[in-house]
Image 1 (cartoon, one colour):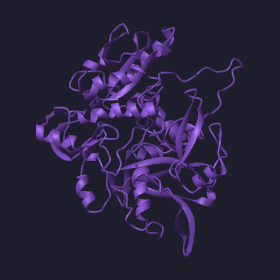
Image 2: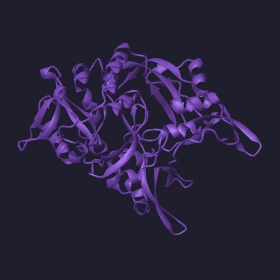
Image 3: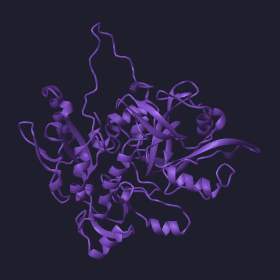
Image 4: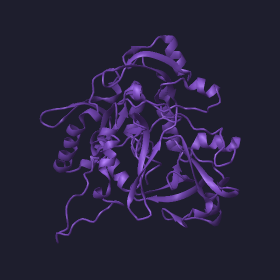
Length: 442
């Protein structure tokens, strides 16, 4: 089951195949375990509904009971939906009604309600470890000193940590020359020379320093544009890895920390086959050069179907990213419908009434400073606000992103997570994405 705590300030939407998949928003759970809902088409951001992250234990219990009691739990589909999107609820109804046709689009919002298998074999054998490292191999005392606990990581975060993957952005405590301070950072476990897992901490920068030389190399305008657009250089870059020695490398930008990562081309291994598709020599060569390559008719075990995608090697992930944009006509049409909500600006944003002038500026994609908004914990905060047209949601900035851009600092500040206080928010060039959803899971 997905970690429900990750869905900050999001509503729960349910559809049932027996009634034509008409979407309903969940307002609450009755004492008898049934859902209290209303049609999504009638929902508004200002109304009361069930916040997923605040009621994760209750919702988790409901999902568990549902899997046990219903003969066909697969008839029901559940989705997490950002509150801001409720302002375009009517436009979203038709998308939810046709889940197969809009599968690629809705997959980003779907909630997996299946319970992880916990049964042991009949012979009583102990289940094999499915992660790279065991929980007992982690130095939890070291993490606790940094303010990181198993509870703060959540089930998904722990699994990612034990598999050597990067965490979400965390506020960690660091002591330097007797001074304690907090900073946003990502953590991961890496293998030491002795084979033991050791902690690697990567602190976040406010914005990527693409205008400064990296490993003795001035980045070309094309490379900087590619890094800003896709997080990958898109070509081979010659870097000075040792004094006087230059080597061909691939370069990627970590959007969560705004730091660059590289790997020598000689250390990259491109598989001959990807998801049942054998790559041609040309595709293999271009992927090794860091280019985006179209691969068709790949097979998805999870979705039991074929799909096309553009693959590109990402250094931060140590593997491919999948880009589906423009490859599916129905998907493109659905995305156009979904993005139509970006023109609908609410009259009230986080408790602050928006004047017609402010709403007009936001609709035009301009940045507006709004004071005395209220976050989910009831705290007042002020921030620069701009519409994120790609994700059809609002981005909140501590600093004016337009001002930073004029200073030549190619900045697209990170989204202030609704669950964190503005005082602890550090702007970065990319909106902080939800926990650990890196690339596309196939």
